[in-house]
Every structure is written in C-alpha cells, then in structure tokens.
View 1 (cartoon, each protein chain N blue to C red):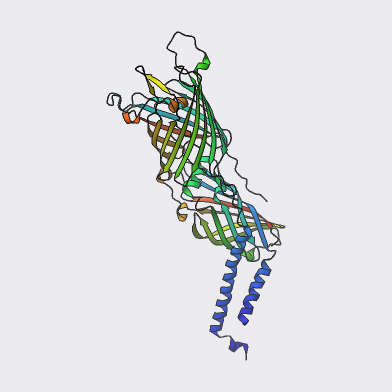
View 2: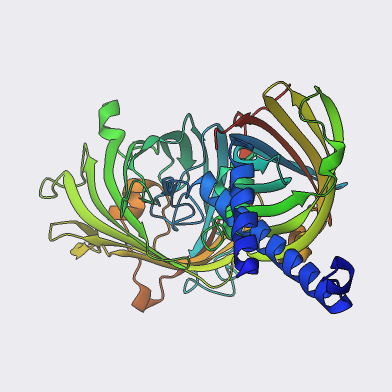
Length: 317
Length: 184
C-alpha cells in the first residue's frame, strides 16, 4: 500500500484534529500542573478589618483605631435637648456641647490622643492598645481584645470659697474592649468599664463605679451603617440631688448612622448623654429617653497619613 | 491502539520535556497605578507567585489581593472591603502562554520582546488578554517585565459615584518577576 493512497483528506483532518486536541489537553494540563507547582499558598493569617467604621461606635470606644503612622482629628457635637423649648432653642441647635480630639497611632497596636470637651471643661489624654486582633487562616482568633484608659481633668471653677487640690479634678477610666465581626455586616462588642473619681459630691457616693458597655453595628450598604451603644450601670449607688431628692443617673443609650466618604466618617446620632467626656457620659447621664431628654449629635473624623507605610521595591536585573 | 500509543508518547514527551524546563518565583512584583486630575493612587506587592515553562512558553501568576500595600491605610481597607472584595475573591490570577517563544533564545543573554496571551482573573471575572512584555535572559535567571491596562468595570468592580472622579477608568498594571530555575 503506497503512502499516498493512505493519506486521504479525511485522515489528515482526523490526524490534525487528534494532534491539536492532544496538544490542547496538554496545555491545559500543563497550566493546572503549574498552578499546583505554585502550591496552595499556605493560607496566611488574614486579620479582620473594619469591625467598626470609626474609632468610636458613637460614644463608646470601638475596636478600631487609625493604622500605623496615621493621625486622626475628630469633632464631636451634641446639641441641646429637643424637649427644651424646642422652637426657641431651634431643637437644641442653639446650645451645643463640643469635643475636639486628636490622636495618633505609633504602630498598629498603640494609639494615644488628647482631647477637650465642653460642659465641665474636661481635658483628657488616653491610650488605646490592641492586645488581640480577630483573624482567620493560619492563626485563628475569634475576637479582638483592646485596652482603653483615659485620665480626665475637669477644669470648671468650683463654686465655693474653699481651697481645692488639683487631684480633686481628676478622674480615670479603664476599659477592656472585646469585639467581634460576625460577618460582613454585623459586628458587636462588650466593654467592661471601671470609672474612678478622686472626689464625689457626697460622702455616700462610691469613688469607683462599674459599668458594662455594649456597642453594635449593622451595615446597610458598603458605606452606610446603623450603630448603637449602651452603658449599663452595675448595681451601685450613683445618684445626684434633684430639688433635694436623691435621683439615680441613667444608663447612656445612643443610636445612629455612620456614613463613610473616603477619608471622612460622618456619624449622626440621637443620645440621652449630652456630655461627651468619658467619665461624664458613662456615669453622669441625667437624661432620660422616655422623658424626651434626647440630644441630636454628630461626630466627624478626618484622618491624616503622617508616616507612609513602606511599599515593596521592584526587582532589578 | 496506535493512536493510544501515540497519545502516550506525546504525553510522555511533554512531561519529559517540561522536566527541568520550569522557572519559578514567589516574590513577583506587581504594581498598579490609577491617575486622575483629582488624585493618584498607587499600590504594590512583591508577593506574586509565578511559574514559567520555557519548553512550551506556559506562564501562570497568582497574587493575594490583600498583599497590596497602599500609601494610605484607609485606601487599602476600602480596596479590600468595597472594591475587590478580598473576602470573597482572595486571589487574582493569570494563566497563559508566550506565543512567540521561538523569538526567545534561552541560551543567549539579552532582552527579548514577547507577546503573552491568556486568561486574567480579577474579582472572580475572567478576561481573555494579550499583553506585550520583555523577557530578559541572564544565565540561569529570567526577568519578565510587562505593563498593561485594566478597566475595573471589565471585572465587575463597582466604583461608586462619590469617588468616580478619583479612580481612573483604566488602571495601569506593571509586573516584574525574576525567576530562578525550579529544578522541575
């Protein structure tokens, strides 16, 4: 049989098809094989980001802080009560209490800052430290754990003729923040709190008060979230005199909306705490939601990159 | 029967051929750059893994999206959270072939222009791409350099209207990978 007769058009087609098909299968085989060669990268530890949008849920400190080398300026505003001569005071807009604060993260674990709040004219300094970061992958950590501590100095005048020590103006806050991002849209935290006042109004009041804070966030879209926080007073004597009658302070409750636009986070909220400084909103909230002691407020934060993260270099030949 | 043997032979040949022909890196450099009148955004990573087979020109790349470092930490957070959704799509990858392999002489040091065709997958969306690059040969090392444009919308990456003017319609991607022989 001569070779020429063997090579029919059909057989050529078949052969070509066959070779081509085989080549194709080899090439895709080769690529899978090459991806195998890269190895299933051992899953690196992925740290959970953006458990909350801001470094405060509303009043309560959140699990967040600016990244290393980033500074943050926050303006916090609480207007007057909406039940206090609403029209005359234009729903509280005429009587605002304000807080300014600046903080800086020296690395990804430690953030410290300074602030001043109106009201009792409190200056404060704080430090916030990440002890555990929620992560998945190689290192699995179900929660974030932080410490927050602040020293607060009340600088409003004493309305009496006695001499006062500086130490009487000082109060301290210590908190442990335990937070968890349950999924893309829902996060929560619990914040055991200890507040110590060097001096109280009356002898019967304990200097050290305990609270349990809780905060939560529910994302509606990638840039809008609903937030709430609460500070539960543990059973203790924490009262003030109202017309000579001892009246307990209320638990602070706030609910709001977070709106993120690039470098800013806008937080709009309603709260029964008019004071913004730590010890005052946590333990000295006279306002009651059910009596309409509701204050409208907002926080605006802006971050500044003061130290740029190091970026990798391209290889050269 | 003959065909089966032939197939085996070809397959066998392919595997034999590719033995010792493969180059690899775990430190591939990938940078992307978005430039608009509003702002320039630049991010880079040197954690791309890649393999190149000089017997057939096959080339694969894989990179963890979270490994990109930005100038601003907040940008990085937004990139992973809102744009490329790294939670759902942790990797980007490329699988392709150098189509003009015959132009490259692996035994002679020098720079060779190459054309690479394959599939680019970002944000879970696959796109057929052909890009041009340069392959530098220096002894037992190879350096591949390429630059190409990627449109976020090609990969279903949503840019909200608030920042539409801050992010370029086409983003320049630069790849530089230096390979060592892998012994496979």
